[in-house]
Length: 189
Image (tube, rainbow, N blue to C red):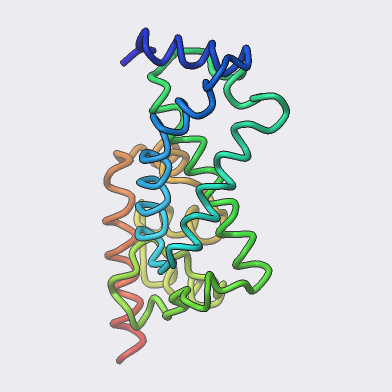
């Protein structure tokens, strides 16, 4: 999908600091930003309060307006503006969540720090203990072992793993889930 005329006009108005352009931009895209926040936090099993969501939305909007709309100026129009803003918002939200986690902030004390070995609903959690991963790798072979090694030890994205092992990108998550299940089963034996 390409850039619509409405979004092209709105983008130009924002970049030229047109009257009420920013208010129109916020009205048009705030719902999208909130959706990205909700989806990103839910997929990472992070519970957020309304205040946390407002803070994250404000951080996304601040990123968009910073340096005289530098983020919008970098938009090349190769996709819809909504698609571009989804990527921007997700990156900002993930960065902020990681920053908060690193600073031991708990998002109002509500981050679920559940152990992925005991909670099968956490599907996107990286296993932090290198020894656990290496133990799991000893019981795996072939592409499954490669996927685990690249994701947990090398920190590669699904796309990077897919390119490296020749596995469809949408098969990476299920492969990781099966491997985590094997690790949970091995831990209970």
